[in-house]
Every structure is written in structure tokens, then in C-alpha cells.
Length: 254
Image (tube, rainbow, N blue to C red; front, side):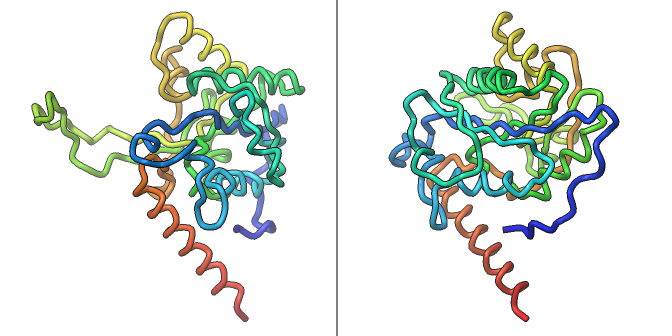
């Protein structure tokens, strides 16, 4: 784990908006389940503990966050048996967008301000680092819209029909969206509510913001910040965590 003495992000702007993290954690992991994984993927064991606990450990090391809230499905008691500093909201919905919207409402109920920033992060992106979270905060804290971690598309992009290639698409301006995605709490609430009313398909928070005519900022992330989705992803994530742990042990040796 990253040293807690790591410098915090640069000073807050004059209005001193606070920063909150929101981790939607109410999904069943249907793609992992269909491939033989038993139960929600965020609770599957990985490198000695549940996958989501690696995610929460990274956010726990970001000193400027007011709090990290985990949104779980009603009746989910996983966190009652865990020692975590994160707060739990049992208001998860049928979709990710619903869970995020409900979580934002809980933040407001608990004293968050509409002008505060919220960082929404996938529970299954367990390789996120405190440094990457700080990087996003530093880049977006004075931005008019907010933004997200993302990667320029590295591979050739194909368009398919019935399992066959029908076109090769220009990848020059294409990015792979990641999380966290950071926006003002009030604006994101409004964006998600409008998407629901108009039937706009929301696959991430940025897509809801875009539907309002706003342009989120892209902040280059890391290829290691992938979303654990399929069974083989667990092996890759485990290998990355093992390499990080080995590197930390070497650094601590006199």
C-alpha cells in the first residue's frame, strides 16, 4: 500500500468544495457469473481478501476525501463483517445509474453540498492507486465540468455485423473510459435525472453529463486500471497485486 506520507493534492480553490467518493457495489457481476464465477464478482477473493477491499484501500489513502460511500443492494450484509473506514448505503438500484443516483441522494442527506465534487468509481476496478485518484482530482478540481480517467485506444478498432468485420474505424480520437469520474454533485444528480426522464442510455457518469451538452475532460489513466469482468481478469489482477506487494517489500529493505 502507498505510504500515507505521500503529499496530498494541491490546495483547494477558494470556495473550498469538498470531495467525496462513491462506489456503486450493487451489481451481480452477470458476465462473471455466466462464465462460472459464483456470487457478485466484487466479493470474490483476490490476493487474500475480497476484490472490493483492494478498491477501498486505495481510496482510504487519499487524504482530501471527506468520506467514501459504498452503495450496496438492500439486504447485502457483506460489510457488516468487514473492518473498513468506508460508509455503507443500502440503496442500490437495478442499474448502475440508479445506484449512483440513489447514492448521491444519500450524500445530500448526510450533509454533502450540491457544489461538492464526487468521484464515482467501479468497485471492480481494484487496481486503482491513490496516485491516480490524486491525479484526477488535481486535474479537474478547477475545471468547469469535471472529467474522468481514460486511455487512448491502443488497438485497431473494428465494426462487426453477425460476427464478421464490416469496417475498420479510425482510432485517432478514440479513448477507453475508466473511473473514477469526477463531477459536481448537483450537476451529476441533474444529469442522471434528465437521462432517466428522456430515456438516454447511461453507461457511465460521463455519458449522462455529455447528454446535457457538456464536455468532460479526459485525464490519461493507466492500463492497469482495468475493470475485472471475466474469470481470466482475476488472474491478471492477482499478478499485478503480487508484483506491487513485492516491489513494496523491496523498497522497505534497508
